[in-house]
Amino acid sequence: MAAVEWPLLRKSQIRALGLAAREAYLERLAAHVSEIFPTHAAFIERPAGRRFLERCVVAARGHGLTDQHSVTLYTDLAVALGFAFEGQPQRRWIAEILEDRGLGSAGKMFLIYNQLSDRCPGDPLPPPDEADDDETLASVLPLVPQWPPGDWG
Image (cartoon, rainbow, N blue to C red; front, side):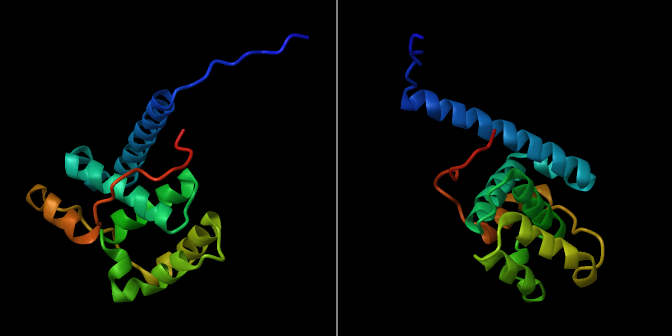
């Protein structure tokens, strides 16, 4: 049997594939947020909303959330509880779970969502006004120089 010779992919080709997967994931995430939180749909469609989603992904990955489902659940938390929920004293319990390096992605999200309705009753917060988009985002989520590594396909 003859050996199969696979074509070599250049770094630029691999990077292009990664960017396409990233964009596809962000589109799915935007559609999800708009469906679950219809009042936020207009915000998510604006450039500031897109930056918000990108920053949520980076923040989630910084907490060790490695799968798309957990990253999506983290983004849902940021939308529902406010863009700076981790820094709010009444939400410290969420930050403690997210910081626990002994838990995996699914375990963290399970523990948070299992307690969420009891500890955070009420409706989701409204989206920011268009005039406040950049100020709101700049005050809560730092700019991140690059997209985190991972499987975004």
